[in-house]
Length: 341
Image (cartoon, rainbow, N blue to C red; front, side, top):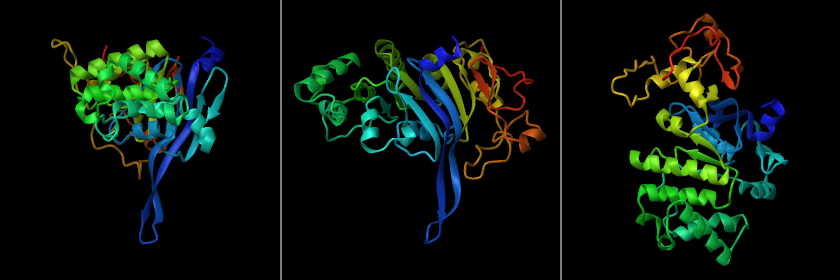
């Protein structure tokens, strides 16, 4: 695939996106610093693929996902979204009616299936709401569309008039998936969409998401901390640490040939299904860096077993070390790191 074809296949491009939350102090709420929740992130999502975003809690995954769907405003950078075959828009610059017109093309599935659904609304009203809000359908047409999408996600007509409290966690998440899918979007951000579910239900929901991707051609930005789940669903994986993406590669490449020490440590914590294989767990020293006062140079250097003086002084550049394998590490070319395969 040449560069032009790859460019045309992309549906989302995030360029230098940054989000700083101000730290205020005193009666006058004077700004005394900033929390670097997302710090100059660059990534892209191809049409019909799943890009997983992984990292420890507090690494900025959810903040990035919410910025992409414009639930949070960015501090700087651009989010380019292809709403049809030819038209690209910068979501960070859209306001009012222009933003509302493009919202139908991207949606979000939330982590908690219990709190993400309005307990006062029936399933029919919950799933129908995006159709009404985006002026896509109403009346009998909207009801028929809701019935179709509920059947696709594994629910029946008898569920239409029920309220969220009458469903299990897995069923509630199916309702959330139906609500996100009803407008036939091009991109869905899945924010820890299966982390609150039992393991057996997780597998069912993951398989459902994969089937829906094949059926509708939708792209996913799949935010997760469970690498075993990510391996099952993702085409590519981006690893975040303290607001920065430190590695991005195809799933098999990243799991088998990690190039960043932080990725190696994350992979070492994944349980192996084979009891005869032993995994040497890498225990990182210290805690996740403070995003309000990150260390100089590479943010990971205080915990990195391979850090040198260069890592403490100079911020590593984001670069491509192999085809479609990007890294932010000074020593990626010389380290020999252990993957899962």
